[in-house]
Image 1 (cartoon, rainbow, N blue to C red):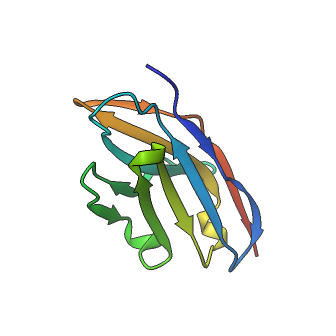
Image 2: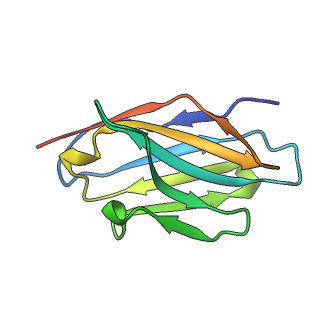
Length: 115
């Protein structure tokens, strides 16, 4: 199977915004559930947001109201729109797609938020 391609990370000041993209192979009718995780420096990886194949979403409490996950199945892409960023959002962000119980991960993208 093909790779997940992640893009959109960068450095912003607190209060700024970024949008991450995760493009997945689109050859299957099962588009799968997709989740964004992040790993802050020195900490464990944590779930940020997830979206099912049907479009249901859930978020970590720490990002509710600030982050929005969405998907465009025609473009085989899932987005994570992040606004009102805080220094504690600084982390390596990863995209994972789960189909038939198997999760495929993309490479991480760094998000750095300065105060």
